[in-house]
Amino acid sequence: MAEGGESGGRARLVSELVRVQDLVHRLELQLRAPADAASVDLCRQLIHQIVALTDRSIGMARCSPDLAAAAQQLQQQPLSGAPSPLSDSGSDQHQPFLRASNKKRKATARWTSQQVRVSAAGAGAEGPADDGHSWRKYGQKDILGAKHPRAYYRCTHRNSQNCPATKQVQRTDDDPNLFDVVYHGDHTCRPSAAPTTRRAPHNPHAQAALQGLAARLTVTTDAAIAAAAIAAAAALPPMTPDTCPARGASSPWSLASPVGSDSNGCAQGVSPCPMPGYADWGSHGDLQEVVSACAAVSDLQGLPALDSDLMPLECFVFDQSFDMGGAMPSLFYP
DNA sequence: TACATTTGACCGAG
DNA sequence: CTCGGTCAAATGTA
Image (cartoon, rainbow, N blue to C red):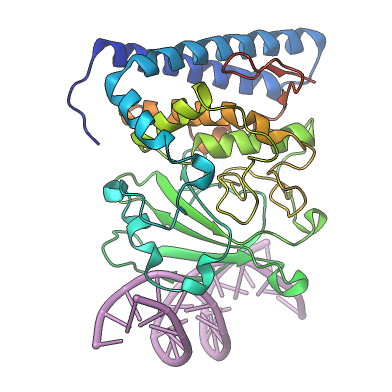
């Protein structure tokens, strides 16, 4: 990505985003503690600060010529209609993983597919952390032009429940701590059948919601997409169930269980929108985009990406009554 | 013993 | 023919 033209404004933007990141970390820690009135209040305060900081970041990003230009360019290419992660996005010189993808197996292209880039931080060195589904490795291949082999996984319940979900995991060339994960197909296995070995969440619904959020946190580190995300959050009309990308159409959320913590079937084929229990989730995709942008932009600056260990943020619920007059949805802690 | 993983062979699209 | 994706036997592990 182009590194020239670093401006003070951009540095300030990054600084803001770093603060957002820090707040998110603090929120995560807070949410891990047993809920009581005081901690709920603190969470609300943190959320308020995050929202405010993010809002400011958006404003700064929109004033940044390069980001704004990229955003404008990509704004004409709605995220929901963005090319499949497997297709050539035109910006994948840093993602050989993408470029190498769509040469074969057109038959699989009809599947839902979703690429996420996840950090191995906090997980084993062998790969990203568990995403909540149980996977069985069925193959590994050295990929032409890639330093690291690609591993192929299928759902453990493929045989017992005919679950077609598969994923491919490949360590990125440039950062051994990052993995590109491509999910194919939806899980049709029942959630109860997917062993959730992770700790019990205080609020399973909220955990599912945060998993979606976290998915977006790690979806990509491409600056242009980050700019588009900012544009989407700041300028595009809120998504409605109508505009919520349908499952099976390369929805950014359709199967975004990033390795790191999806849990119990939040990617099940239950709702047209990604998170069961959130019928109107689509209207809140904006925040996901924004935070994704935060992660991406900070990565753009060589800062550590928000890693998958953030996933356990588990207690958000989007306030659906919030007036979307502003760019940001509000959050509350149930 | 019942799983999961490894790994070379095979298949099929381009 | 190349190469990505899958299969399945061999092997490992709890």
